[in-house]
Amino acid sequence: MKIGVLALQGAVSEHMDMLKRVGVESYPVRKAEEIEKVDGLVMPGGESTTMGRLIQAFQLEGVIKKRFEEGMPIYGTCAGMILLSNRIEGFDQFKFGFIDLKIIRNAFGRQVDSKEIDLNVKGFDTPFHAIFIRAPVGKDPGKNVEVLAEVPEGIVFAREKNVLVSAFHPELGNDLRVHSYFVDMVKKFLK
Image (cartoon, rainbow, N blue to C red):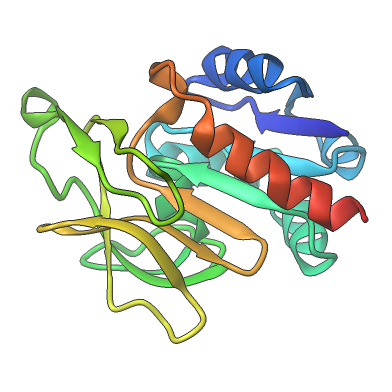
């Protein structure tokens, strides 16, 4: 199993470290041919407008859409969540539209308003310590979206088919459960 981490911006090495701790090989990917060779793709946080422009500049949109349509699992954190959604309130920016979720950018406020909370996650026995940094939230999920966690502001962890999104940054903590969840999605894809 090979998981690619989109290495255009954001916490690339942190995601790779978490995947290594789960026992999976991961690679930074920047080119279409590299994305063709992986079994799963992580889209890290960063600045979603910039990341969208870089995806287009490096001509990655087509290969990512093709791999999504083939069923390859994709996991987006924070800016990755924004890019994978199909609706972004108040912003006309690049998005893939892979998950039927309206996104509210910077739902918790500015960087100084970032926070950490213990989050109840569907399927987890104990709360997950979640780190939010200028995080988005989801609203108005489509009927096929499974909401895995939410806070009063909105949805912060969700899945639709082969797409997983979180508003928080599990790569910045020590809890491996979110990355393990994604790895399980990739294992099912490879069967």
